Image 1 (cartoon, helix red, strand yellow):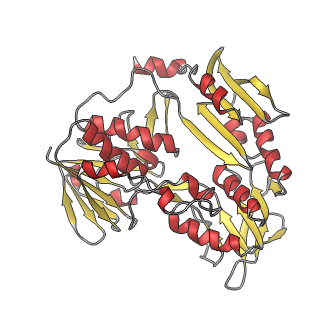
Image 2 (cartoon, one colour):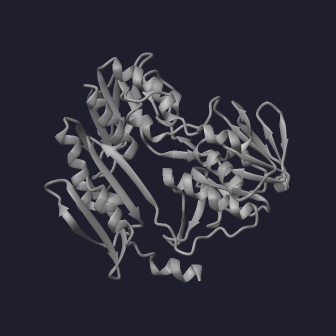
Length: 393
């Protein structure tokens, strides 16, 4: 191969480009990014950057060492089409990039709140999103966060730090219950109330209202909540529509790949938030919208593209973290609803603990609050569930 096109200019894209060079590829690497800026780190957008404690320069993912990668950057242009058999990429401007191999790393975008666009209603995925939201937060007033997942909780936490009155609305009876289970989700839920956030659960949002600018959030049953700004934290959508007609297998869940990032089209691989991939640790296909996956999966995809070994001998457990109200939350592994859970370090009352999830007696996931060192110890003890091991063999 003489030219490889990496489609996506965020963490997965730059990680793929770095991995190609680390694997010895010395041809041309073209990196296409829809945003008109070099890759930047997104986790601080809902925390340090939103709070004004970090600037744009602090978010940079590229370093001086990346100059040695000799990458050909094409920024500010979204991909619009992939030619059958994947040998050329057409950009929105009509420009065509011919390549011998393609890495799909176009990420995901925030799911917008349904309905007409209205001023004061935000999502948070990009740097521009964060800048716009921060302007509204600094203006004070009443913020309503729709969705008490990790992004919603982090925004609520930051907003409270800025002195904003915050209401969080969650359709599920218990936020994070599906991720952590009811016992531990309850501990995280209490963080909202203890920090002065009004939490409304088990209630669906039916609409937004306001003349020119949002003024209230309407709930099922006829209730309303006054709002000067709204953040919708209701999930993400993979950026894969541009692949229509390409022959690459994909659907609303993302680009289908195996554990090595291979798609159904030779010499086209995919990595990061845009993928729906087989996870050797979990033993199932899933979309992992986590920073660590966007960092690690491109290495496997690059290896696959170059015909090198892509699958590590020991499956890596999925990992993510979140900072909320001064608490560090960390999770690794894969939990199922019927897994047993126990506190293995510390206590719930102190909010300094490590919890382990077991399946058939084996530790398959761990969750920690404010115990980063002990979390690392238990994370290293995770055992891949048996079905995954069987499939790998």
